[in-house]
Length: 354
Image (cartoon, rainbow, N blue to C red):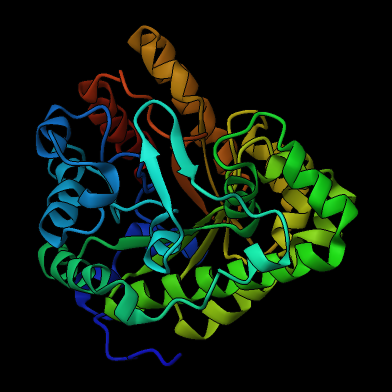
């Protein structure tokens, strides 16, 4: 799959982007900030835009993608926008029978349990997701000097949904396949890595300035199993994206024991959840990487003086890293007050300037 290199990555605004500079471990005028799941769930204008529209339908409508992606940028002083989509979109686009059920999450009609099932995962082509290309181009025009982050799901997380048939606390079917059928596991992971690579390339070709791989549930894997069964595929994803010249972010939940291995995987930025302080995370990840994170999303329900104190602590610990992008330790929770997020974004800029 070829990528159109003629994308507006070098506009003056993007060249001065604090977010892109931090990702590349360059000096910044202030610590940049954006929030995972900043586009959606907690915003009343998001709920209004989504009214009567199923999630996967919203992810296939360029007008809605642009509107929902822009909503938090209008509200908050964030240093980057993240593309409104879902990690299941490319799987749906290649014909996997799935839906995203409200209050449940992704549900797969026919879970993958054998080689014939895995063979249903055909390669993703740009023509499968024309709405993504159209929406990214529209957003790049509207965002100007604000970078757009494209994203895709990591292979373990995608595999877990496909094998379990939906969300899982224990990932028991997934781990059983990984432990007991390593050849089938490797084939499944290779196919999913191909799909993730293709989906990221579509977004970068259309103008995304950075990409994030959400391997949200890979923290369920022990380090030795991660190294053997996940790391080779994640490393290939980041290696394939490297020639495109955009920063690459790697994030998972509960990955404190994996941070060193995630650093080895090849991303420029390692996302850290709220469980590990950023100064400790910097030691675990090792040199040559920026960090992203990591205020506990639940803290936003505490009194403001608590939020401010903890945010300043995150900033202080983040200064031990070679680059720091302020974020939450996972996504914005649905009942979060948008005004608190706005106040937090302003605080990060004010407290880190100079």
